[in-house]
Amino acid sequence: MDGRSEDKVYLCIDLKTFYASVECADRGRDTLTCNLVVADPDRGRTTICLAVSAAMKKLGVRNRCRVFDIPENIDYIMAKPRMRHYMEVSAKIYGIYLEYVSPEDIHVYSIDECFIDATPYLTLYRTTARAFAQELMDAVFSRCGIRATAGIGTNLFLAKVALDITAKHVDDGIGYLDEELFRQQIWRHRPITDIWGIGPGIAARLAKYGVADLMGVAALDEHILYREFGVNAEYLIDHAHGVEPCTIAEIHAYVPEATSITSGQVLPRNYSYDEARTVLREMVDASVLDLVAKHAVCDGISLYVGYASDQRDLARLGASGSARITDSCGVEHASDHGLLPDAVSAPHRAPGPSSYSADGIRARQALRDPDAASPSTVFTGEHGRRTVRGRRAYGYAEASRKLGERTNSFKRLMARFDALYAEIVDPTRPIKRVNIGFGGLLPEEFATVDLFTDVQAEQSERDLADAVLAVRGKYGKNALLRGTSYKQGATGRERNEQVGGHHA
Image: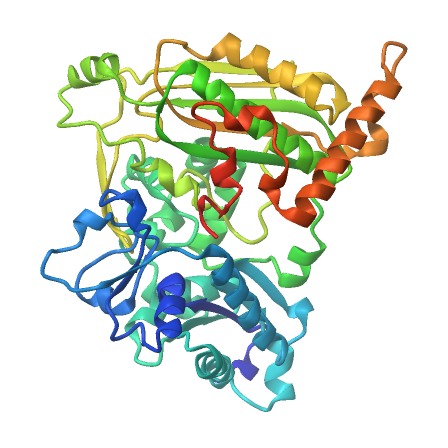
């Protein structure tokens, strides 16, 4: 394929089984021949494998499996995750790309994947898109020992789909799609969850209308799609026809109307009400310091608490005739790694509507009613067969509040979170997950000041936060901690030594 014949040519380059490939390369091995899994042996056989080498995949072992799922007859190396090292290798590879293209023409999509607008470089280097992709892939392999695959497309969506689907079925690992080839090769592709941005939630909603592939989406009445998905139907419709108007330049130029910060963690065991409150205080403290470091204030907060299984859940859900209840990870762990199974995602997506309702309050508590629960659905894709029973099978408490002021004061924000926690969380139920959010971020100069504001006290608190940040910046996050982090059940000290919830 000669990319010079197209108006636009995009590359989407993915580093194969990246974490596992890095570990193989560091051992002088090749992911194609070395049996290796990236998992923390200290977390036991139930821990999830963050990545498996290509050789393991050939043996039928899937990404995101648990250690006990690996067949006993397979000999393999277990490598402890080193997240900071993976980030350093990713940065080195990004530097290799910059030797060939301008940063304005690269969009880093994840630690192991990026988009490149190759259009101007095909003429500059007098080459084709396929040859250019191969040159980049060869440079990465020769200098880092990491193998890559690539998708080539006439827009960002087609490049991504070419990478995810087409590239897997060609010897050189480089797939290509234009709109015509897209209709020929991808329209009837199943499962539809292999398509970028379509997760099990969307697939299940499409299945209600007998739609199981993109041809079905393209043929479905648009009014039905808009009724089912709202404004997100626009993206489904565009992608069903292989259309993606967004460019890398537009991604770089995008400025969101509103910003927020969020933090969440899956707890290492079932926590009591008081233990989870300790974790909440640690999380608010860390997020407030993040606000201060960004010189920002917020005007809204949100809290989500996910309950663990208990006998009450087992009795209620068991009565529905379900074979069993999935554990606390199940589908939930996907969201810890940026996967949004119930939302269409694409590079030009603007943030969705604010989570706050018109009156600034949204509070819900739920335990799934077995009589109303949708039946389990099995999806087969890159990560094997998965049974989806709903992300909140054990119930949850969730609420948002508008503050009526703009602040980054830990004292004020912690008081609001304490009140919200006491209001919505069931003290009798074990807790497995806590998420918090700060919304409506604005520069610090927009902080609310009125006749009742103790300006001197708030300045003293901010000076203290700045001092904490300075100490931590020089000596590490655990150099200076609140006493909360030494209480029973606290997770802050351990998490400060991790990156993305894993060993740094």
